[in-house]
Length: 485
Image 1 (cartoon, one colour):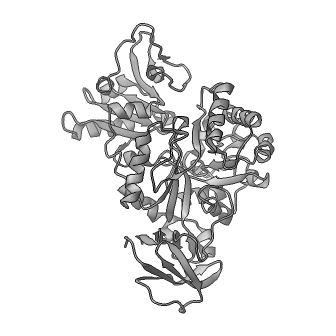
Image 2 (cartoon, rainbow, N blue to C red; image 1 turned 45 degrees about the vertical axis):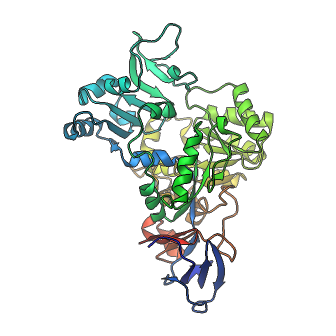
Image 3 (cartoon, helix red, strand yellow; image 1 turned 120 degrees about the vertical axis):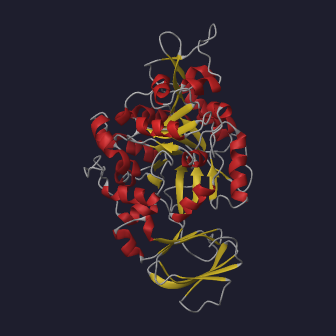
């Protein structure tokens, strides 16, 4: 059941521990009344005591990457086998786009390995992190990557640490002979212009899936420099293809750009590369530019060094309300007080512990392992924490993140990091904060509030004992049902 309705009534829902009728007119809650006292409505949903929550907001996703991922080949754990199979099935000339390649389990990947798996075919494979694409020889030719560098042109030598692309060629790795290895770093927009993604703009499946989790809003944290990216999202929201409230970021290049309605303007996304840090002066310039545009910054910090650099720059230029650290994958305990002093928010992804905890325990520097994906110690130190999934690069179901924040266990069952687990109620609140202030006071179901809601099929106490999206019975976004189980 979906589509606009003029009045909607949720009967006998549990709100704040008591059963009530919640009446919606248009896109707002108008009354929260004792059960069976509200007047009839165009659409009525019997809740039978199921918990009614504010709709979940995922504070860090990549919507177009999610759409593209949905139409791509998943090669996790079986890269060679799945690419061979796809090559055997596909008609001549049909390209293969694959995602979720993990070098930890699959080993190094380059153009020559892809050429052996799918001879003569255009193949591109995305690393699980989203930072790397690997192209076959046919895909390199299709993208216009020359076999040899022009005179005076720079490239990224094979085996060198990843560094962000300035000039286009700077993110294209080449071997000792100058030939492209097929490995492209941080060149998503550049690559998309040359190899448009299959179903990249088909967001309908993304919207349906998020609605099934009780999600009514997201913040798209793609550091795009292309204003057309905003228009694509705005069109999907306007037409109902994407039945969500969408907050956008964009990179420093779009600092002064106001996204088209109904999109909401969020912070400026600033990427501190995982392996090659920008200079202090460059980072200070980006922070200052954003703040001059009256916009906070959302700073990608995965490594300890990246976080320490970002915090140092904040100490230099000052912070503003809404400034955020994205991921904070490694947070040394001595940094927590500095984050609190600067009134910074951390937007993190505890579900990575459930998805990749065993890899972290075997590959992450032992000195960093205790500091992985903190939640409880950040909150105890006075730091606001918002929840997110980083989909499609992490599990897109926020209930997995809620459970992972509580259990902090790898797939093997081993605990990850030194933090104690959050209680499930606190973990759920990571997704209930204000859209523009993750980690703030949780939104409530009150008259006048937006009609963005998540209905569970059990009381909240039961749902929190075993957090799972299977308990989502209905989702209402903007006053309209967008999902019913």
